[in-house]
Length: 457
Image (cartoon, rainbow, N blue to C red; front, side):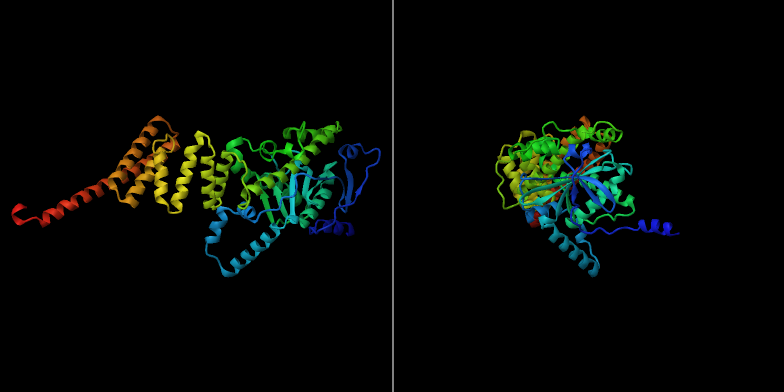
């Protein structure tokens, strides 16, 4: 009975608490893997695991800009939720929680960069994170700690250390971590049934802002591409050299578990290390771009356009307009100029500058892609603003003719269905404008007839 009670007690969740990093024991002469990886042996109440600790002078510490953090954490969904009526007590608790999270978020000592190497790239309950890479700002540089499983039995020990680090630094910074790394780790914590899932104060995933900012220019926004073309890792004094391909990493680990050579694991550890350094450098670059007090330097026109679109989606429309104009003035490639002009037109319309918006739509009226929309917008402008119904009818008919030609030439069934609804709306507009023009023309004639002498009627 005593044994049964002990086993049941072991299943109770253990609350994560801040603890000092475990002291590392040097490997002995026979521990070839630890010596290969430059690791020490860490021990806690769940057992042992390997830990590799290094400090790097680059990338240097980047103080987070309040403006950048506000933009990175803002989303359309949150704005809509805030607009909904709610009970006073619930609203008060939500405001207090946001204020507390914002206070922690603005403290870089509470940040933890995280990247994992796993036994599979698809996730799932059978996937283990055999290498958990952590990094944080320390002494002006980056402290890196990597927790390694020599065997799956060491998972509890590694997760316990990870929970302790997150308790100390509850702001997680990742690259695609919201989709992959953190859900995987949450699942592993849950499956232990002994270690509670750590609570995060905030989670900054840099993949999505990076995609907005640099996808137009680079196409691929893999971290290695961003290092090469955005943060300029070579200038920082570090490079990947002969890096390990991510797709090969699970097989290298399985080969090691089956008694194969362990040499490739040194490359895996270096790969994870560089991912962490690249992640920290990427934050510094995004931070400087989003900081409204900073200088843009010699940014590419496509990057400025990407920044404009990111700012517009986050509600910073005045800055978005400035960036979009800088992109157009900075030599934006021809295939992107109509799109940028369209963005400027909508930004002008949203701030109430209808004349500027109309002038920009005029530039797009003959464009193959945006010409239909431009003519529609000009028809609305002249009908509602200038009250020039004749001019509005000309643009409505032009938009209708363009749409019909486009429908006849191309379009998937779903696109055709949407185009048919759009055509019906344009036809309604044309009929309404003709009716208004007839009334406008008939009005003076009726007035003249009413005021004419009786003998001339």
